[in-house]
Image 1 (cartoon, one colour):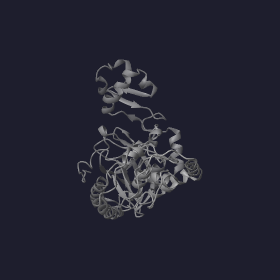
Image 2 (cartoon, helix red, strand yellow):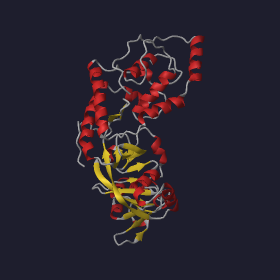
Image 3 (cartoon, rainbow, N blue to C red):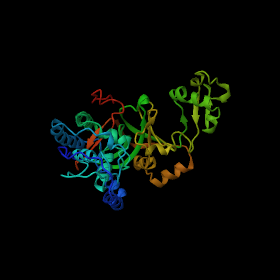
Image 4 (cartoon, one colour):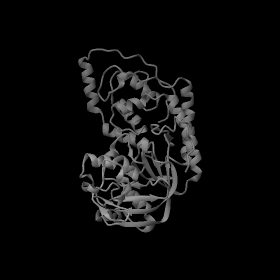
Length: 405
């Protein structure tokens, strides 16, 4: 949200015993609160049709910078005390006033001259707004991820705005009428058309040691119900370990081994105490347990990365979705595939039925769609909502604004 401009000057909280009036006040707060409504309102602030990557984003970032600069020059927001950790709706204890000051100073909570020690419905809504802007689960609780996001100094946030303005400005001239953006720090995907987001998807991207690369390419093909050819890096770093832990691992996950002549061999023919396995080809059969799920979205690149479905849907509900080996897993991938294959005459019903059939089909796009994997840790929309994400790959810390496509 738009920055309030200065922290409220409020008296410190004081420890005190709870009176019967305090208990009545807390019960009233709990009774009258609408957490679901507060979450929906917070989500609406960020789920606009404006792309993370566009010319408009650059303009909105400039506006955000103009708000943050004088605020940071005045000292920024105060540090959050440990007492705010764990606070949630109905709590009445030391730290609440400091929490409210923090939420007011970042514009998540309306300014008030006087506040009390209770986390009321206004404070609960403000916590959820803060969480939405930082890509966190909307719990309404100052949990670990929320606490650490609140502890980031305003000066650091301003520096993120500077860096990302340069990144967006560098990339915007290369955008077309229709494109896909994978924003790695946010672990999200946007399908953009005519300057508007028509689809937004939660994603799982590469962990730090196996980072998703920054690139620009074009989606040219969809593989339905693909085989998965296990990369040598995964054979070496993961598969050998799994087989030592469970000799039936390959059988359970329908992974077959082939030698250089294309002949299938048995897992018992390999010495799993060595790296011998990397000399063979490992192929997983199509199906629900396939590591790529029901589809693979291909675009030319030198890193052998792609977008794909996944059988592990639970990861999409996490705060930090950095688990892959460089490729990108897509929630609701059937909708994205339908959008990509629109000019091929595919609709959602056909995509879903093809998924369910387990039939192997390779469909080339009649009109390849540009795709950009990017690193944007701060952006803003025209409503004044400013979003931030963690510098997971430390590109902000390096001051990196240009990337090789």
